[in-house]
Amino acid sequence: MLKQPQAAAHRGIVMTAVFIATFMTSVEVTIVTTALPSIISALHGLAAQSWIMSAYLLTTAITTPIYGKLADAWGRRRIFQWGVIVFTLGSLLSGLAPTMGLLIIARALQGIGAGAVMPLTFTIIADYYDFTQRAKVLALNNTAWGLSALVGPLIGGFLVDQLSWHWVFFVNVPLGILVAILIQVGYHEKTSAHPSLAIDWQGIGWLSAGLIALLLSVQTLVRMPLIAASLLVVAVVSMILFWRTEKRSKDPLIAPRMFANRTFSIQIATAMILSGVLIGYQVYFPIWLQSLYRLGATEAGFVVTSSSVMWLTSSFFVGPILARFVPKRVSLIIITVLLAAYASLLAAGLRFPVWTFYLIAMINGTGMGIVISMNTVLAQQLAPQDMVGSATSILTLGRSLGQTIMTGIYGAALNLVIRWTRGDISFAHINEVISANGSRVKPTTAMAQVILNSLHGVFLIVVVMLLIAWWLNWRDPQQSVVKG
Image 1: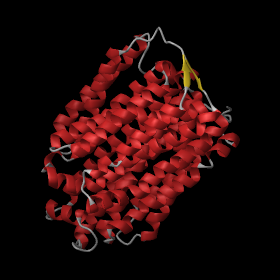
Image 2: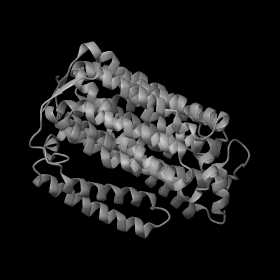
Image 3: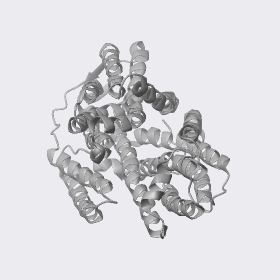
Image 4: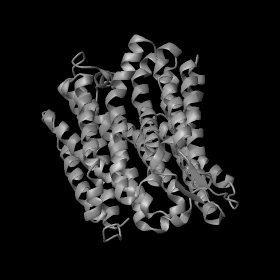
């Protein structure tokens, strides 16, 4: 059984390592997207370009719950160090990759490391701080995530312009080495043997099969719908068999008894749904502003920045909110406000005020910063003490799946509505308008209406998801303030 780490003396060193690790893994996404055009050009890999991100997300998703289980049994330090080393090695090999195929393999290796690092940053915070302090520390750690969102594209652009695309991967190598040294020096924990632990290979197999099939289904949704449907069936069957296996296993990978607490289950589901909403805003607000309002990429990108700033600010209020209010009521109020904000987009015409998008982005960041931070704190508090690592990894997995799955669904919705409503306008011409920066390619009124209809389709899905999140939280049986 895992015991608390040796506290105070080295806490500052460990929290510094956690902050850098959070920045390192979160900036990986924003910095790489900036370099994608250069990578595709250098490695001649247009056909396989989506796998640069998908390979990373896929291995991260598969390994996250495995590491959570191992961290609860064998200790955080060992698993965290393994993740940092593998992530750093993957970063180095990605920068050295001479072909697209080898780059994709190296990115998959990076994801295997990130699957340990990402959830364990939250778990280590839970080990060092009690319930009353945890929300504040999580808010401080969120500044690393916010910093990556703000500076990642700038760093990526600078490295590509001044050096080469290889350096967007190399930049994480010294950071990874620094984190490994800080954890080695500062993080000490006492663990006792876990003699009853048996690796749940059958559970790992079914979970891996289910997640691989699900994520491949999302990837092929638009281009090969029949194959996507077949993969979805495989994913559903695999997940059913996984759950049955977990119920029989002596040491399950994901213990079903965690989900006996309905409030815990609702925290996981809410985080997954809101993460799916978040990716819709992050991707399609800039597209809306660039394609219909002809704003430049930088100006449109500020809509994402404003949300990130509000997320960071609002997350500092989570501790006081949890101390005074029932979480269910807070979530219901915030989701209602988010619903009203996003529903307004369904009635938006071609002359919808630009400032409204920035207002909705700020509302989005404020609400998400409170609710998703609450989800994290509550999931850790409501899980059995010996399963905090597993609980955190499950929440991290849910957030990753929410973003990955909804990316595919939004893309499919956008493409389908365009094809259904474009009439005589060529799809290639519409694609050129959506892809263009600033005012180089101006849409006709008819073309703009087609694009607007497709964006309405995307945000109709967002509204439906928020309705589901509202209903889930309304069903939450927790009627009192959660105490530490």
